[in-house]
Length: 250
Image (cartoon, rainbow, N blue to C red; front, side, top):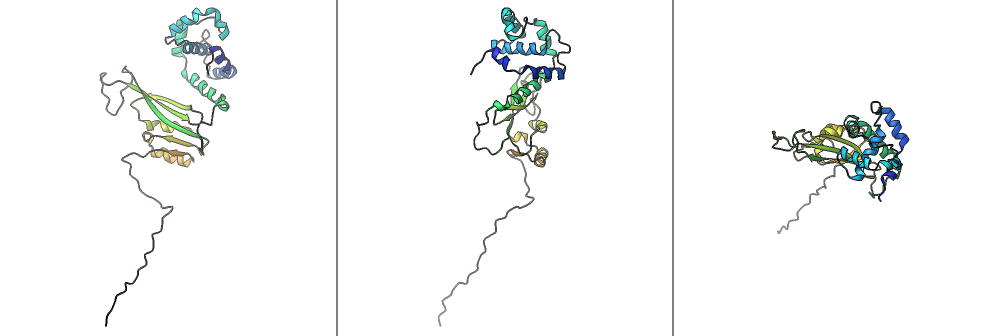
């Protein structure tokens, strides 16, 4: 199903957006380019498939007479939009993203996974994005310097398996190990989380058990196990000794 930019903007709860902007005080130093104008500008760039901010502003300038349908009086200046994009705290838009997920949660489908006994089923994994610049160190235990190995970053994401929506997102350098980020998860009791063995962290496993959180993870190849207690032991069959008959002749 497709929709226009005007229809998408009408779906956004403007009152909740304003309350969140007031809480973050995100418009304190941006009187000419408030957060709502920046959101509409970014959505316009997505719908028009424009990447640079200058190209987005030029496209909005060409449609100057129709911007009133989007709630804007005029197109933003390139310098003003660029300053807002660089300097406005991205934590505000992150919180607004999760606010939208919470707001539309009753409308999200929960029937994509059948025969699952857990109401809360989560999947946690990471994806590596390779970069050409040397802003971040390369991937691997022994990354090569001087541009011999491309830098990269990792996107760690926790997904609600029923609605297929993210509930936690963390971006880090690719050199950081995955297990460092499992401690930031805030999961409800009696939920189930599934992740790869890269997140194998025994201390966090103990905390999951203490908080009654179920988890599924593959063991590492070099993992050593020790049996501490036997909950059920199958009894060994009792061997009955028989006497062998011998034929004795007199």
